[in-house]
Image 1: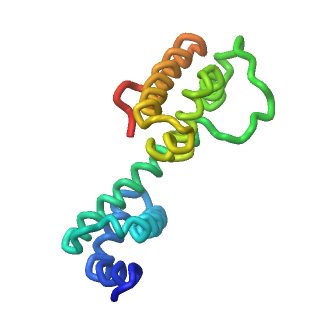
Image 2: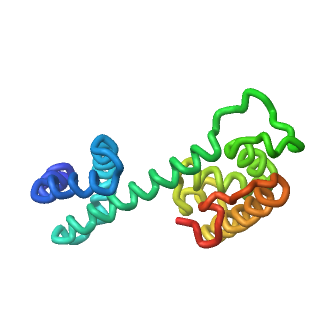
Length: 178
């Protein structure tokens, strides 16, 4: 009987070089592509039991690479926008014109109801899946999706009206969800 890691090696060997080239191609640098490939391989090995048809491995692996790449891109956007480390100085809302994008976003996030804030932080900053968030919070998947939609809508309102942001981050625009 073939172990999961033996199966993975057998399936990966014929497509490895092309998959690495693909991962490097979707990234801005060779090292980012190599990092992406490593993360995708770990995820693929973990999810291998869900692959039913060995003949579909290449397509399946590419989908894993794309998924990891999209998640990394979105996470990096949200982490730049809303770093989780504590502020050194609290910002005053009456000095909005002096606030940077991250500070403005942090203030907007702080105004969300905690249910929406939890969903946004777990999904956008931490990269959790909707199903994982639902399990963690003990709510339905539709409740998590609703919290994400309402949280984004409220963030847009806060970001533009209350904080006077000149532009709303693309991820806060309608339809910008995973």
